[in-house]
Image (cartoon, rainbow, N blue to C red; front, side, top):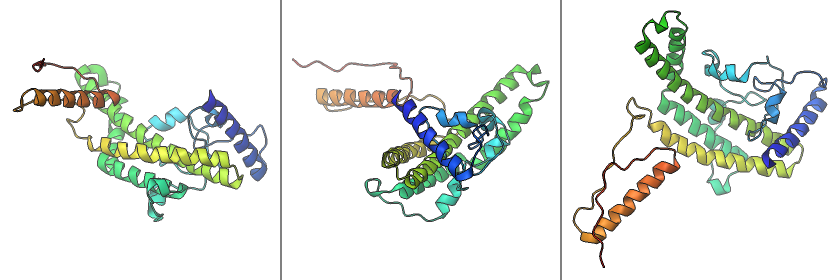
Length: 267
């Protein structure tokens, strides 16, 4: 509820700011990064400040159509991840960073993530599969159709995840600029905190992007053996196993213990 109220309050200030600067008609549609004004009221999302009109698009279509996935999200003044990364903004340690430093760090992470995912190939492959999925005779071969559908779904999931992360960065940059223009310290603090959170999240996404090989989506077996060392070694092996299990469960993996040999109990 708190985030919803904050979003609506911020959206109201944003609309007021934009109408005063652009003399908008209250009934005029205000497209923001391809969505309508309703995007400004979505709880839990950063709120972009649009400075120029653009064609209104269905946001779900924008994230799913073959042509749209190649479009890079931008700020109100046209900044993209590539442009931000190319500006050479200084990246300071997180505790010493300002908004520009946080944004530059996230932009660099996004570029690295795209490189690890082979972004150009993913976009091209998703277009090819989209064409195949539109063939009327596709389901004449259910096995082939299922394979194509699964691969397309996996690629689109990766594309949507990165695009949404980029979009969130652009929105926070716009919101930080708006907060400073309006001298809104509360909004600036909230946005700075959100950028810092994005910076930490980006590092985890960098690691996840390493697991983009053909076999990385499959399950694996982990075996922990006590070896020599008696009961102390057995106890330590149990601790290690619990650490692996907790780590995996916290990240959404399903963990199943296939076989376990309890250690000896010392009186």
